[in-house]
Length: 442
Image 1: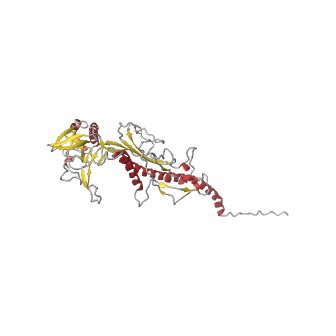
Image 2: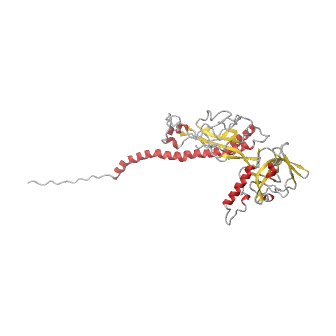
Image 3: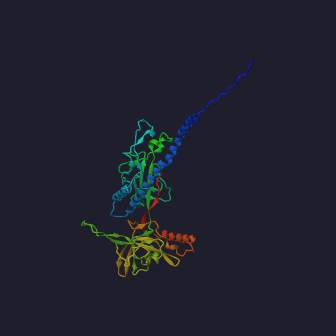
């Protein structure tokens, strides 16, 4: 008798942790792949962010320095070398900043060998003792106006394309060797480059440079390199460039005599005399009749008197008789005419039934019987107390008001008419204005 065999069922118990162990290798592999992308993102946000911060700090310094370098161009008491020394001192003061906070122009990060040597940049570590805020080295004076220098005096051409090439050449700025050419602009640049310590970035007496900004997170990212440039080794180049050019002044301050507090030095001055606007204005036709060096008399009391306060392009003749709200430099008794400080005469042109300020003339004045003699002088950059940037709302737009605002078409038409008159008037009071606000990008 044959008996049927029993089929035995077998079961295999699978541990829940076995699947996790099997999947763990995949997670580690994915993380290893993603970490390169994570470092690349960190390089964009942090490394390039630090480079942009450094550029902003450098740009702030060169903006102020360019204005300072041009402002004293026509000051006979200041030599070209002294002018550039003042620029260098100003930059050093701006970079130093508040001693209670970290200043400088970006970080100075010093790396040490991580023990592996060679070109394995990601293995290096930061030397905290040597790292910190970077204090930029002193700018070189560049008295020879070498095109690659830290400071250049030259001619700015607004009709040319703006921008600076890697070799520092520009189409909108040049330094003519001809001494008869009047330099109307001043350029200042700062840089942190991979060629720091070598020409053209570091030339004694001409140019200076700090070290390039290193990658922090980017040192471990898969950043491409070429035979001529490796981002991880050559790092990030940062440059800041500013150009200030002479422009017709739009606001001139009041002429003032400021007493100086007691000083123990025997030869110290007792007062500071600041040149400013004359206590009278003249018509454009009167000004146009004067050649450079020519003189004519203005009877007193003047047809267009001016109170002792700042005067701005676009103000009406009637407004020149009143003190503006919020200004405390308008004393009830104006200063008597002083040839040393009354040097800038407002020029008026008619618009409709009123006269408006269209510019300022640089003059020499002398009190004569019955009035004042006004002599027209060549164009001059005011060393202080003048700006080429409009500071207040123009009175020339008065009458363009609507119930809720100012009619833009009406105001624009009056502005265009005003500036056409201002352009045709040969104003001789100039002031420095920035014409290149941002330098090269990181």
